[in-house]
View (cartoon, rainbow, N blue to C red):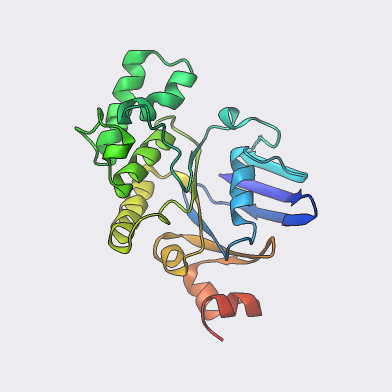
Length: 235
């Protein structure tokens, strides 16, 4: 599980995240939903160690990782643009995190091939990212994040760059895989339909504040604030 304990973040004169406390349940897929600029990606990046908190603490399975570097947090992250290395093959991209951890070649190759099979990309390990479709690139990024066996998976708008048909299919595949692996996952999205379809619980964020957290049906039937109500089109 991962806990945010009164975390906040300010950039110059802009407060991206106001003091926020929230705990994810072990194995849940938790969507952080809100409009652009509401602070949801900043919250995710603080979880991954890509932004430092101004206040508060972040715990992963009871371990304080507030000041730990990303490579010492045991989290996997899929960025919105996937951040694949264009000069590397699919296999080398997936192996990268293991190589940085000093895992021997035979072991890391076997684990990477296993993950590529898990995400349905067996036989594509020698291709370069440019030779893949958007959906396939997303799967490579997901395999790379999972190959290190993270305690928490962080997804930053991972489906935003896909066309609608591919997005819907990939969304369902992502949810099936997350349930199979039982990995605690944070999904950042601005898409209400996406969050409602895959998340166990949703936190609705606005202006750097989480306005309400709950199951999709609870948010829809009992919105706690006017913003939550309007965001779901109930006003």
